[in-house]
Length: 171
Image (cartoon, rainbow, N blue to C red):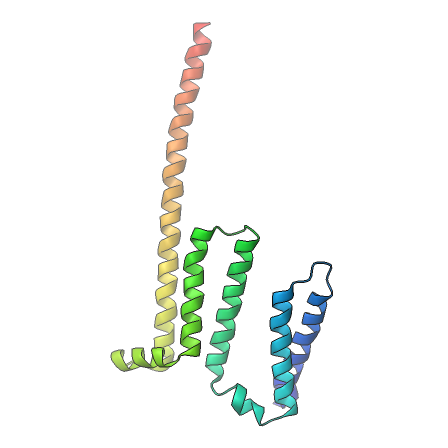
């Protein structure tokens, strides 16, 4: 595949998307900045082919870093818009930071590979799977608390309804 299709087209689309975001009435500056940066890097790689080795030494690390930055941005944005409570966001932020750590410092995965004897890809899957289990456990705890609260509220409502019926019968 030609470099223009591999890097040029996504880079151009990222720059167009950034321009649209900057041009909005309430510009989304942070996503627009990231899109501008990514688009500029991709276009520079097309214009100067030697830069591909400098910017993309390990494509899985770049992909993992991009996914973790996107993950962190989405989490912070949902907290900022009050769509996600801070106490729930902590686990998501921790997950994003761990992914970013392994993207920036791949020797952490290398250490896991060396200790367990797994392949590199299997070690990455184990790390991601571990955090997915933690997230599922956290969701289970939250659902259990909601179930307890719902049960308590139902019991209190039944008691209040009984008191109201008693007061109405006394009249």
